[in-house]
Image (tube, rainbow, N blue to C red):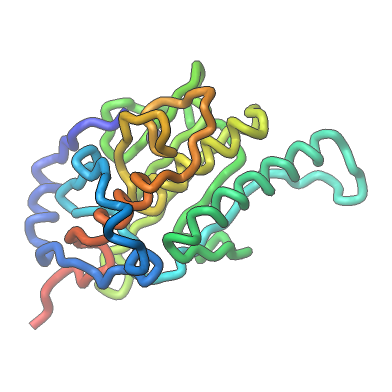
Length: 234
Ligand SMILES: [Zn+2]
């Protein structure tokens, strides 16, 4: 799992030169939650690096589903059915989360803020890297990682999610729920197996719990450098 970040002196110097983290307005979908029923969270397990929390400020979040399948459309094969099932399962998880944070599926990968690939997580992962959240069953079956870029003097991020093509329907749904949770800002794990962001994949198909939702909500109430001007311009 992810560990504390080890930034080079150069990176630290760059981050320290950035304008300070600020809080974005709370998305309306999270505002509407009832305070009384959603007090419990695992925010303390969610990591905030020097950039701040990994929240999306330009809603809806644009997701692209990359099924890596370019087979002939005219041929209905078993493989095609498997691809279709993977896609519809991932879409189900997106739909579930979109009740709490607006998400829209787009058809142009160039514009995507989150890319979900039907592929095995890359093998060249260094486990001590802080910008990856890895979920393991036996072999690695799902992973989310992020990177930053600057556009028009605004610091932005992009999430890359890999979900294996070799999982059954239940495991795919479980992995998609979990990884999309990371992708939209819950960069940490719950220790309760009844939460979708439980640290380990288990047999139990955890729904998106009140604790998951409230953790997401708490994350969006925290400061970040993402979505703000990189440098305070005079
Ligand atoms: Zn995870």
